[in-house]
Length: 227
Image (cartoon, rainbow, N blue to C red; front, side, top):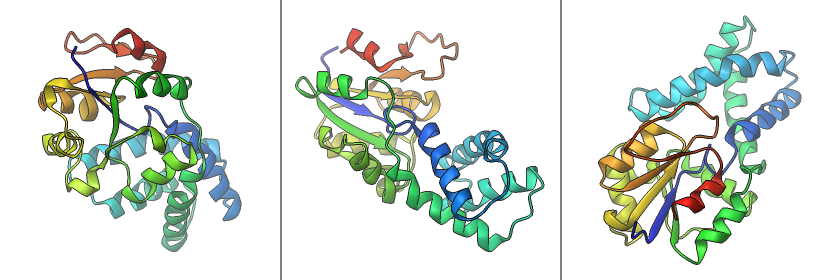
């Protein structure tokens, strides 16, 4: 494959977003004395959050609209009465507390240790710039990576090719010797392929994926089969 540079997505690829997010909401609910059952909240919130992130990638909502709207719609859906002021507090505390939880996907350290002496490793993330580095620091993986590119620093979001071109330039890499590893077929995989890179799909939830344009793996250790 003649690969020299490996670009990773962060959330849902190395950093276990769902587990860390669940723990964050439990902490926020307890702190703010929210009496709603957190499991019921998360059942509604998770698909709404995905919808809002898709709108965010497509530049149809702002960062602030995402942070407020996903919470407001969830509380409305479960008929829980809550003030806008408290929703704003929850939104702020969620972002403040989230990076302090540090659960990673199984074998993250093993695969990064395996790759680090063979390739230059980098991050490309759509996550909020103010917390992505904190997440990596808290989970003790920051030192593995050279270039760390956030969509906010570029001004557009994956899958926009400008993000990948910016990342390649930042890493002093060529598209021909670079590969992207991420969970989102739309944002990570198709975005990378459209930019001329290769890609590996991290299919952490085991959904059926059959596409001849890229391999799909269900555990990080499977990366060894390709790199």
